[in-house]
Length: 290
Picture 1 (spheres, one colour):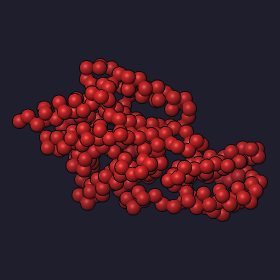
Picture 2 (cartoon, one colour):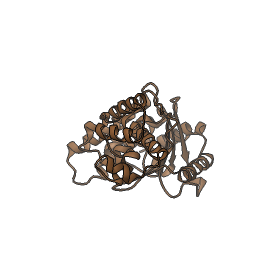
Picture 3 (cartoon, helix red, strand yellow):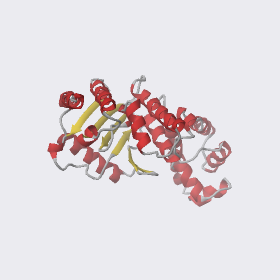
Picture 4 (cartoon, helix red, strand yellow):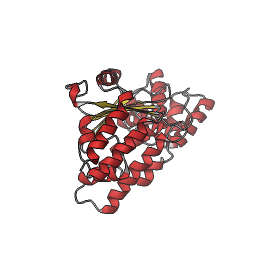
């Protein structure tokens, strides 16, 4: 039987329940197609359920658990978990401006215990000021109405509450010097953004490192990525890779290990966390100069 950590969001609960359903099906030697037929669906529907990619119909869960020979006590616990997994997350109120492929990320981010991110073009979203975020979003949203821009900024700011809530995740961000020197939004916006990073670097749950130009080539030249770790033992680390109109979520052990290795090397090659505030303060002085 699976156990979940207090505060696990619906996205993580769906993945955990889906994983348990897969284990129960495989233990009985039942194919996805056979299971799909039992719930008036298909093998591909079972696959989506087991990956946690869709919400669960209670009737489907009841029928599958009966087919898998699950006893009444465990069945009731799993049905209760399905109800929790179907509850909307706080981010659903931003559904009008939140792409479906990014909803998964927000849900995973919400339940992570450790978020490790490498950024090469922009300051990490969890550490952006509202003005910096607005400038980034406007640049990538030509012709989009102002009210939509503000909704997207609001979503980004709401995500940042993760770092101040009790039991929130630890953030370990490695930022390329290029991202910090790119003049997003103008001098005043960059000054405030650098001040925000200096303040963040002093927070106990934030580790911030900078990849200096002087370091030359490094382990993450392929681009930005994020690795999320979760307190639930049944949930593996997930690597997130964002594209212009979609994203990849990598969970296979060999993929996760490759990115984890790259992150470890990147942390060694970057300036130490103890140097971060001095580096940022020097950049702030440069931006302040007329």
